[in-house]
Length: 263
Image 1 (cartoon, one colour):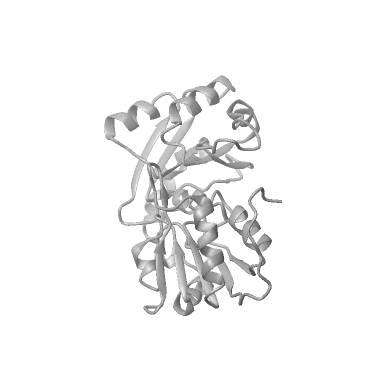
Image 2: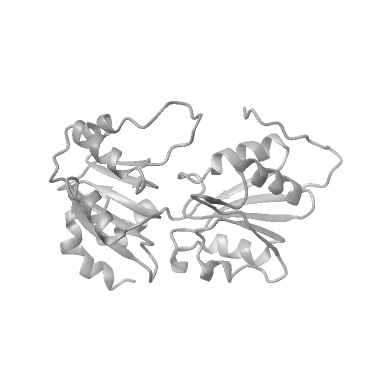
């Protein structure tokens, strides 16, 4: 159960909140169900990383609220966002919480759903394509491949304070997974690289960093564990980005020209 308590009023009319994944940026990867909900929504509460093309699909009569979270620029605190969703669901029939990628993959969707249900608000999840699969794919990098990787780990490089355990065990991941896909890891990459090498990964292990991976603003950096931090500094490569560590990162040399034809 959540530590936060939200008062339930049994006499208050209640609508429904839809936790909708907007996908990784390319509007062509947005789901048909998500688009239909935007077109009929009374209220849309959206994150910062949702593309303008997807926001353009919102019902023009809907109330649109920006609740995005970017480092140093939080529009609303998480608890404020949840209270807002509860309040809107008590006023309107269809409330869409539009989140970048997939709501349940480092999107706090589980937290929001738990709090909404505890407040007596009906919730439905509409999954989205997550950037950890889509961005590498657009760069010609399959996160699994029978010849290179039979295991993949999706992990956050930016952990919240006060979480259930202190930190990701990067050294254990180095030994346990053939492909490591890191979300929100650019700022903490020097520490991550050091720990992965301490866990046994070679400094020559291929690394790919992909920023805005499915959009026209796409930036890609291909390197190794030894060189990636320096290259990012030299090129000014910044978040938000997905970082892929493992042999599959080298497949972009073969597959990227083919992947480009599908953009």
